[in-house]
Length: 452
Ligand code: ATP
Ligand code: MG
Image (cartoon, rainbow, N blue to C red; front, side, top):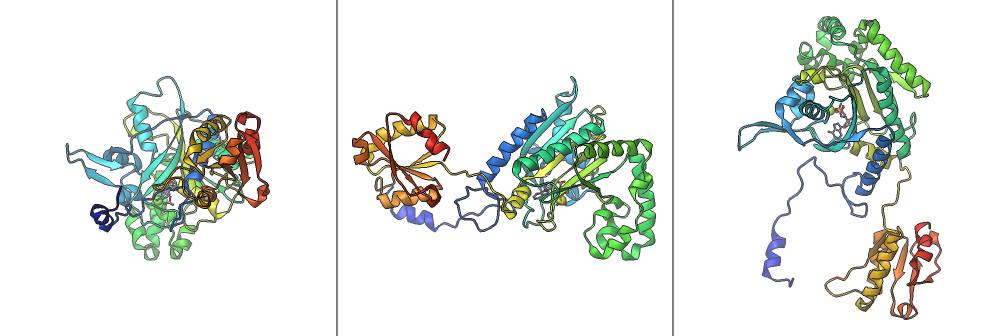
């Protein structure tokens, strides 16, 4: 289009930025202000996830991003941080329905399972991956739209599946090049059953009441609504009184302790190291028995990359049949940030080659060869014409460098006249020598590019 008054008027309009705390995930070569994972890393993560989840026989599902508000209020608990202050909720203008952008995945998955009577034929192992929304103060590793991998094992009561789901996370770390114990480590606790938590809670309230003068406003507010969350407080001044509080572990009965011991024994058997953290309570009300977190020391106070636990009561709470279940949510941005921070060797998302086409007359023969190379599993990005045509060789090689490709395929008139294409290494590490290869027989030399 010719530049005219219309284009000028358009460029004068103010640009519209994204909503605060909601990010674009972009290709690596695009310059960004903030430190966020790039889309190549993202795709690689998804690929590792698919392999690992497949190895354990978990199946994929998708549920809506919008759910009835009541699902989260009932499922997560009214006095949790999420429900109290982090949900994006609104009334549908068309029909008045109370709706919420999902802040987590488990409640929606359980809703779907109940709705479709999905466990009729037995237990299910499931996973999903998608956007979650929480109205939090945006900072590194904490966003208003973020993404989670969610893994759930439904209809299985035993400590064996608790261990399985924790082990599955370890295999993910291995697939991604993270070292368990060094980069991420496991924290484990048991929340027992509700009657045990009730007895503990009574003792806890009595303890904190006796030290009410040392509680901050948040803790005082929670004292009678959700005293367990006080244990989760990050206020350093309150640590002594928190340390002295009665421990839930001392209130667990024989069965709960046996379950916990069995999980520990299973983890010991596969040499998975963990720390029992009696303070680990997790943010949602629905948890019981085993809870766990995979944490890192590299991301400041956003140190939890993965958190989960058993939630045997949630199906009933949401109107379903009693169904034991366990699952975890993994924060994808946080995990990928960690990997960038650690400077782990990451896979190369760039094409293997870039096709330099000096003259449009070469295009038909170039296209034929590029298609043949792609059939030989060589990824090639083609130089496409701009408003002024193909552009100079210099400009084309600049694009070739920017693409991240290791080789340029040059379709010059001389080469083509001899039935050849020139392969020119773009990185010093590949050696500078240019060579000619026959257009007629790409299958014979494609491996040179593929395996370079
Ligand atoms: P935190 O204590 O950091 O607020 P949480 O207990 O609220 O975490 P969960 O509800 O357990 O987090 O969610 C599971 C995972 O999702 C977290 O461990 C984290 O990796 C990720 N996560 C949670 N909230 C956010 C957010 N606002 N931005 C990015 N990732 C998040
Ligand atoms: Mg939170």
